[in-house]
Length: 387
Image 1: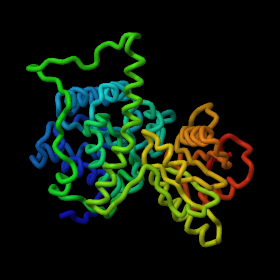
Image 2: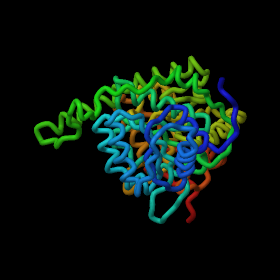
Image 3: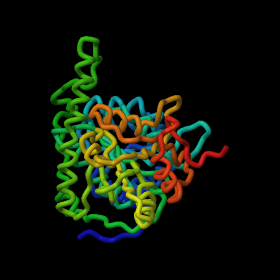
Image 4: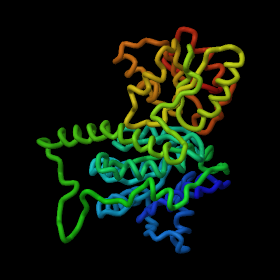
């Protein structure tokens, strides 16, 4: 039976990975994800988890090991952040292109320079085009639940793609929260044993990752793109089953008090809970403000997003990373493109907030909701920037 726990989210996340019966963990420590793999190494060393823990010399090597173990048919896990993710990224493209169902927790952290160990979404945006499925957690409970969902989706033979679960570094990774941790029987009822569709086997030789000549490269990339788009209904199906079994329901885009909202704030990650408090305060003043939270970053749920913001006059879209010399942040660019394609024209304003761990407060959300009702004079606005 599931049990209530109060512990650091990173430690609980490692316990969730262990409950998933992972076979191989290859990892290199980098703040703020280190506690996840440290705890997994302890579970393996103490005999509580029957798995191979490979302490590699770099994040590049970590993902390389994951590619090999997953290709050989092992349920495979890793975790990273920021600069380590940047070093790993070369192999992340390979993992996705080879359709390997690796699961990775990313404790999101700012990219250098200047060096900064605190949270924003720079590494998540950097990895946007790696071809991984990406989900986003708002609190510790969601981190645990999304770990089980990630393995379930990645290993589904209709998908066979790696899945990244994003959690805000420090804001979530190092927080102690009350959570419900499923027991082994419950996890097993949701997550079947991994049965690889194809695997490296000396007795049945096959080739993975050959050279893609110009005659085949375009077709291979199109096939990958189609597989990523086709994963969306499977992702939703797996969330529905999780909700039916355990009572916690997830959707690609989730809304809060948007039914009659004239202004909708669009957010991702842990700041969404602060935004809900701001929405409550503004609703108390009679202001028609709501919140749309993006749970699924890749594949982007276009139809679900349009439905979530339909009818709003104003959208305040928050980006937690800079798109240097861009017309707006990556999330806002996605939103504007989707609306343009559907001939929808609400007033959209982009706000860059929370860079490098800077606080985003209830007052900030209130100011954004008020500001967006005026005609936009800038492509994007930086929140809490010092003159």
